[in-house]
Image 1 (cartoon, rainbow, N blue to C red):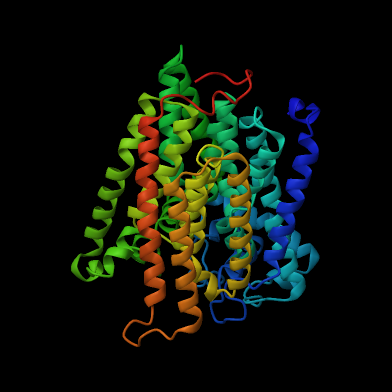
Image 2 (cartoon, rainbow, N blue to C red):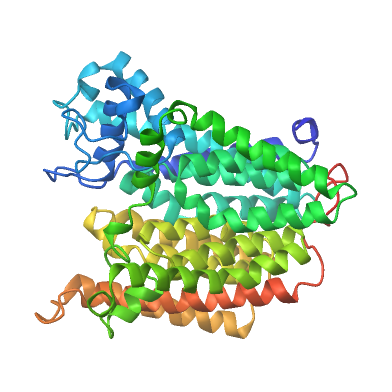
Length: 494
């Protein structure tokens, strides 16, 4: 950190400007509607987060995850791990001191005043700044220290302004920046050789949002492979294991001494009775279901087993390879491969789960800008039906055009984009534009009212599958560690 603050090459000014731009774009998006605005009785994710503040502030810990007269689990019951609940408790305590009406038990359902909306938006911006924006800048300054100042600034903006995360957290309204930011902090620690702190940070990410399981295998396999190649493998593995156990123990402490509490918490985190996928998610099961009605043919137990087998088969090659050949470069590629394997094949997938692949994909921008940039555009495109539902079409179009422009000027100035990549961008932009235009002016056939949503889902799924295969190819054919060469000598070698 001292090196970063004292660097004479304009790092501080560049990072301040990048931060201000990132905050400005986030705030502009936050001026638009959010999930479920003015739509009783369930409203949406905005109400879910507010309701969790209400519950955690007014009820004792032992009642947070249980059905009770004051906690109707069918009305946005808490279904995230304890760290999310603690975060909501902190926000709830602040809200209580500003205006207790915002979180009054039972009577505050659906509360949507302008002051409360401002408060809620601020809570996301603050955690985004601390847990995501600053770590992204630290990552760029670490791995791009030998690149030109302007290129480093451009890539920082591309990582900070990737559209999918901004539209979901600051438009739709969620706190994905918390779990993704903690995972990114874990990556930073590990790249600096502080594996114990990295294991602790990633354990916190898992305890904030269970979907971080998408990243768990690469973290486990990389640290295991790195430990096995060290001088004291047994000691290092034990140390990392104890770190994870202690971190989980601290997070779960209020629930550990009551079997019913722990069991109920696990049931809330993994609700297998919800179904194979949600809405028109761009994964394999939703796409296949257009032709083969899987949920009508197979039982729920069979679908769970089928999705488990498919996910394991998709993620195992990358994971085993990472244990045998651990490197920072392969680690980030494995994070993309694992998150996409889970997104494409696992059970109970939401369209927003693609954000778990967006984070590591954005970290690949310095080395694979054309491919990663196109993936980030498709990830946003895949959520168009959700964004339209939330009234976020205008910010979606604006941020996509801005991001395309940033990609264009970066490619033009610093990278040679091949003919195949140019065709991919041209075809993709044409397909996206045609579907947007059709959705805006055409009336879908009565027989296929969700035609546009299904087409968006299927097209995005095809690209995600291609990108998944491509990143696996890159991981298996990588001959050296591109990132290792950029990290300062103070970092321990792989």
